Length: 232
Image 1 (cartoon, one colour):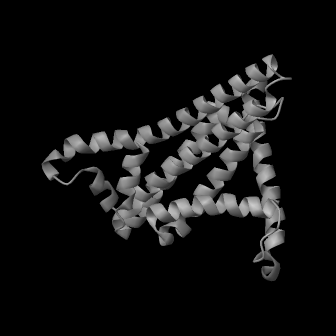
Image 2: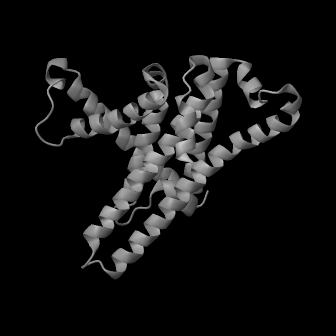
Image 3: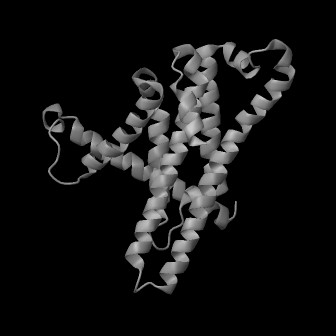
């Protein structure tokens, strides 16, 4: 592994370490339930984590219901934190976001692919594969390969979309900051932060949709179809 290829991996490990430290610090603040129920007067680490995590939980709850949201939130919450802090790392001069590397985004996408297929099989059993064959048995030989191809394309679009957006964003921020370092640093940083946040939202939204679609037959909550159509 060359130094160039190792850099995203090292940066990812650094981000994971940062998340663990923040989780430990936040957990220490909420262990005392009497104090935890009282919100802080100013923006603090606990407030940020509560708002950040609460937003993605509410997003999942509106999409798939409270029961499935609680069950599948750990994967979405972890992805949201990892991608967010990886993206933000690129705004620090001298650092590149791990998510600008296809190796890292592909790793995230593979986790998503395995996760939503695992949950789909776990919830629906053989019915998950039956769903891929379509409602008409004599069209199954045609529909099943198309549905399998569609499933395989999902992680590809996830990783490529995130990688390209973050690579281009980091490149543009670097170029513009180098040209106008004394004149336009704040607006460019704000724009870069917006791109970072939007990419976290898109990745986690699509992941939630995929999990919801894979598990909806067992739970009989059809709301994911509308969300999937809106996302595309």
